[in-house]
Image 1 (cartoon, helix red, strand yellow):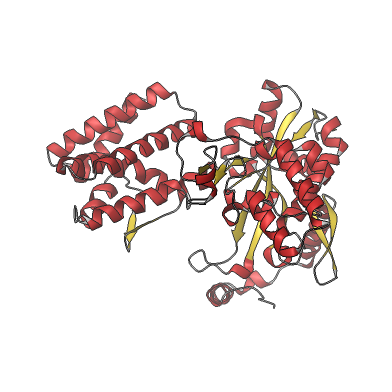
Image 2 (cartoon, rainbow, N blue to C red; image 1 turned 135 degrees about the vertical axis):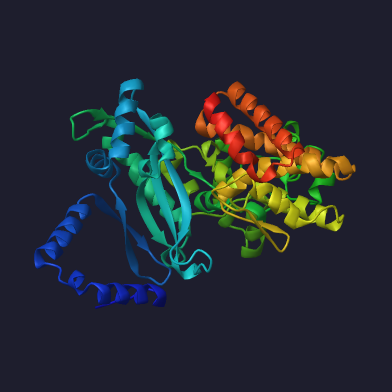
Length: 451
């Protein structure tokens, strides 16, 4: 038996399972044949994109044929089928096909191994609405190990250009293809959804490594740069006033890439590197910004930032929690144990954790923690008359998070705010009567009765 890529702990579990039931090793030969047959069937849904690697070797990247894969999921994935059937009944063709790009790392999440990091593209059909909340409605179409990405001359941008060019040129998606039940489906490819780091790599922007950290703005520069004093039309990345931002046009992004190519014909390497930093773009030969199909079919400014990463997974929400915790610790305002005792009383199914002055938790925990933490700040810290500006800022963040939860669940805004007001009133009542340890249960029962 071969256990390559299996940890010692997992191997021990396998051995123990075999010892407990040796019959699981008696797998009939025909089941192996069925497995190989299934693999061959799956290969019919794929195609190969060729790359020239930095070491001179060629690499065939196996990606999905999107129309064929969607037909497969329509037949065998009940979540996808239900969502698409409903969309076909309620929306007109063509449908909008969005791609989502994210990093994944196999193995222990507490001890990630960067050598096992990969980039995965998914597709989802916008018209499927709330069905997209189910992960089975997002179909993986491409998987690129970081070890391969590092050997592609222009990395993710070159791989993405090849992938999107292939999708945009697929006439079956534009003209339509028949689903297994005979229904016609037409798709138009839309710009990607991803976090800032992935969008930067995909489009080939400099990000924080250049003068212009925001690729959507033409006048936003990095913090404290000398250019800010020379021209009042510029502002820096810390500006919170949208009126100071000038949004860039797609034509400007593409023309900047063209000018970089013109400059590369006569400019030295050092000056060309500085010019790329000033423009906020990497010079590309095979990347997204230089691919004709991508230029004609996708708009960089229509790219969507992933809300989960913006706010909850290494985003604004987690950062603001840690910053205000630091302020509270510096002012010696309260004990962290008291904070955790308060907040954990609201969430019977999960426990919040604060270690080394930082909040520890996944995106879902962060979303759940912010409104509770804000209530604690208003009740316990605000009466002390300290950190007034900090508390006001965090209260605004909490309001944004509540609105995001409304959008996520498409719950009527007015009803959710009435529910929140009632929840806080009931919580205050329970706290006044020293029923904190059980108040979450009483409130939950009342809310369920109201619904």
